[in-house]
Length: 203
Length: 79
Image (cartoon, rainbow over all chains, first blue to last red; front, top):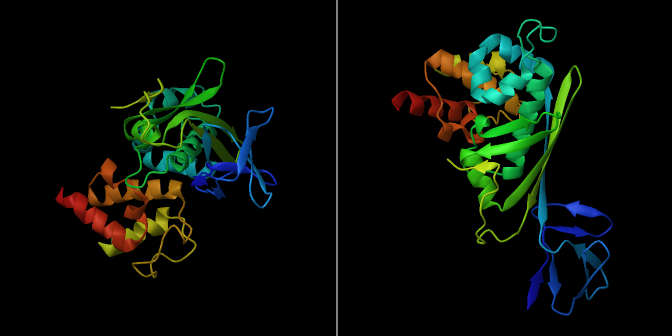
């Protein structure tokens, strides 16, 4: 019997690699430490720890703010409406035009949201067509915190990958914007049926 | 058509190479085109050829080379 370890392990440090796996023999034995992480000792004496039922995917993206400003000026609402949801557009509007003097938008905020969409795509890992940008929404709550909401093909990809949760962090300076998205897969077994989380709306 | 595609790439592709002289099979992403630049390329192609790329065309491979773009534009014009 061969045991295939899950997708993240601890050797010298956490290796959050969603594709890696390692073969261990049945003579490996397991125990659990105070973090709830399985300790599995190999024949070689090499030690691995893993969480019992989850794995992670990470995506990151970096966007040049000036590129977004240029797109808004060049393509206007065609660019905005093709990429961003009404909620995102509302969040990025600058009524007094104090920012983005020629666009009416905070182009830094738009750039950060574009980065979040691309980072999410890296987590979803589509093998065919990529999901429409608008099927990935950065939703900002009243406190200013953001979360990723999916619909359509993006939601289907998340369900198929067993992604139960997505966490996002956005940041920007005047010239660059970036986002990191972490997806937690509730199980590595894609055949396990799970209801889609409420934020995943399949259409 | 290829000349128009090369013009679009020159203006919007943010390539590190001359779009006017690269081979039609040159990988545009490996040549410096970012995902955001590919959005601009897509919108500019839609303007130039009076088409709209459908969601099923929104894949990296559609914009990975001049040859791929030409095939995509022709597919959308025939749609």
